[in-house]
Length: 267
Image (cartoon, rainbow, N blue to C red; front, side, top):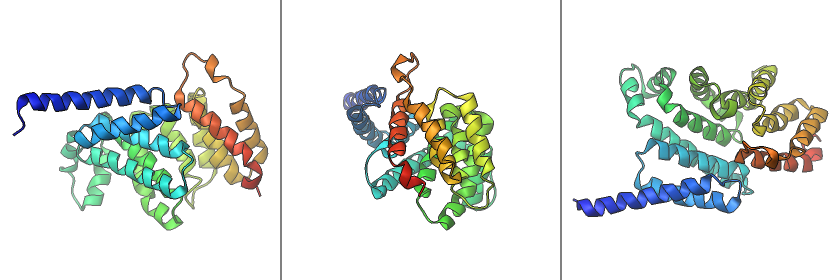
């Protein structure tokens, strides 16, 4: 048994790591701060894996690091997979989820899907970052693997959409907009509808427009609209906005990158 004094010291050290990680996360548009946010929060997570909020934050940091990094595809996929597993485990071990799960009948897969369908508001963040990371991981995988996971991802996002459609600045709609360009058998107009909904309700979040250009306009071959939408993004002076969102800096840089490779994307 760890002496009470030593236990308190350990807990204080973990709290310090979380405090440092959160401080750097707030400045995540700076690559060094994002690195340190990952560093401190990963250390804290290893010591406090049952902390739901900490797991969600770590999953979100991993997603952001992978999405905007210049790493190769294998490294990115590995990060998305890790981020997905962290949030998934946080959900499966959350008491609010377990109480529903144990009431369900059927095999484990059916019980998980059924429990997600009835999931409470309290676990929305974990569900979201589970699905977002998993989807990004799957987008580079064979069609059959994407199809095999489609039901799970849709069940998660439909539940989030019913509880908190504005989560992560229209995240559920942005998710469906992207997903429906990556799975066969879906009318591509569904992608457009979801992206337009996210943009109309959250115009301040540049990721909605950037991802619409990257996924929908590219898929449809709308080069003129692709170019116009991204050009508008890079012309925005983010520092004139009092409600500056760090992700907007990432997405503005993403827009610049996509424009730099525009010709190859529409060959």
